[in-house]
Length: 275
Image (cartoon, rainbow, N blue to C red; front, side, top):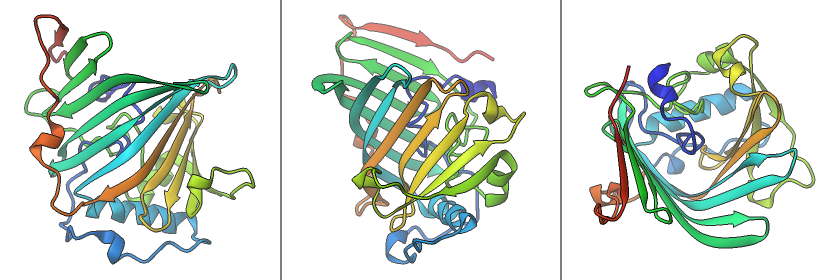
């Protein structure tokens, strides 16, 4: 889909839920914090139990915020870089929403440095801001007046099965449970690992060789997502911690407002929507 492909790039993994600007129209569900009413997934949960839990999570999630890290690069050469920051997501209605991601630190090897970049998608406008380069790109990625479900398989730039019927997931992927290993990250304790392998000939098979998702048993929300390119070179790992789903008091407009910049000294590039 052309309109979704315009959002690919640095934002691809974050638009997971989450990345995450809209969830398809659905039967209304009470938006109380589901963590308190949904039972914890059992450690021996089956594939369809986990997919059903992710489906319910998407339908009961109005908004969330979390700490996020994105590691990407060529795994064959160990050329990996990690961006660290925070993500905010809010539904604005059926098939509409907004997301903001702020990275303020960068890790290369064992060294950290301050390096701030921000992304904001709202009303179809994607703002990509780099503070070090004093550069801002503004792209209309969705036709004015149209909506896009960034969580729906095939529409959003990241195929995360949140709020997706398990039949739709099985149609596009072979899904299997992966047993935890001894050297697995301690941050993934209490998660269930699913591997989604795109079926041959599908649109996802051209983009990924596999998508691995670690689902937190308590929050029923992904703790980590790993995507690997078809040629096994490029790998992206997104980790979410301190996840707050439907936080008390809710998110505000200010959470989706970027700070003002001096447009006289910054490089501003604007791109209108093109079919």
